Length: 250
Length: 141
Image (cartoon, rainbow over all chains, first blue to last red; front, side, top):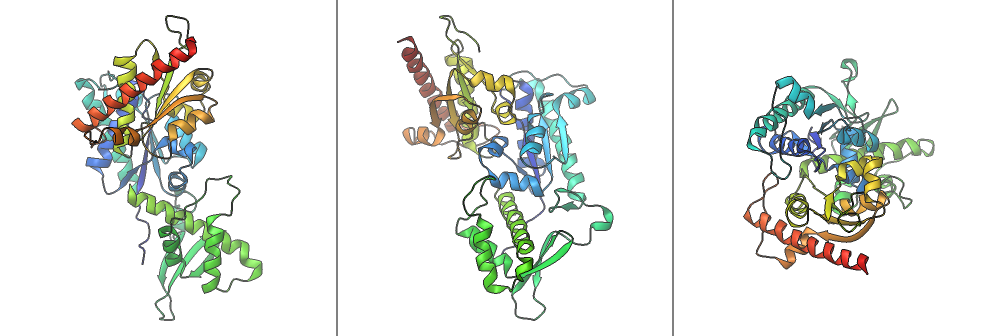
């Protein structure tokens, strides 16, 4: 049985090639990923947002992201918001240079050695944001922090069926309703293992979750009038599942 | 659009700079080798992040000039994004293809490439420079 997606924070670095600050964002993001917070973070490829990386978009839609930018154009923050969801935090290298009274970075292909403290400072700032976001409860349905009073129900959760059959039942919170769907998680797992992935938005082919719905109907009786709600719930659970998979793949 | 000595615009190099895998770093390193060492007079980099955002200046920079793209994976972010920006991709390179031609250069590392990765980036850069020369020859015809 698949496990529920683990909470992760996505880091989107601009990686701009034209400015030393772009290289700083890249190295700082990798330092967080590889050294400071390897279990809590994934990196997200910014260009994939436009090139059809639906998994990356879905992740950023449902999980908190930190955008790290090298200049005021803020490519990482703005592109993340444009194609997916508003980043939970947005860092600018210039701000950290000013706040810590550090030297401006030099070098493109290889940063000068005196730029190392800045890379460390940016990495520390990212890690601090990661800690804050991991401590907060996050709505994967809305892609926003949960208000204290609404923490009770996660958007997608799975438990064993009360009938004792062992068939898992997934509860999806959608449009203020709790929709319970039997065997949804193994169905999603099977679809994922068969190579089914969310299609880029705007693709006119049959959507993957429509195919998954056919299997869902085998295990669940869906009232005709509630079919759109169930379809939306399955679509939400599917995107959340895929985002979790992407996160675990790093 | 930056002109070179003979009045022709510089050829634009766009690496994917993917952050998740070694091959992304190889594209970035190769692009820097091209524009900083091997062909600084005839090539320049346009940052892919600006193209993703739809920055007008970056989009203008890839329109009307030959663009060489360097991609680290089959999703071909650099090639796709240049196309989306209205640019003409004259030549596209993938690290995997280059690695197949240079099996002795096994890349490792993302923040910092190992020796094999550096060698692979150099090999890719040399292929790009060869392509740039061919593009210039064609344009001069």
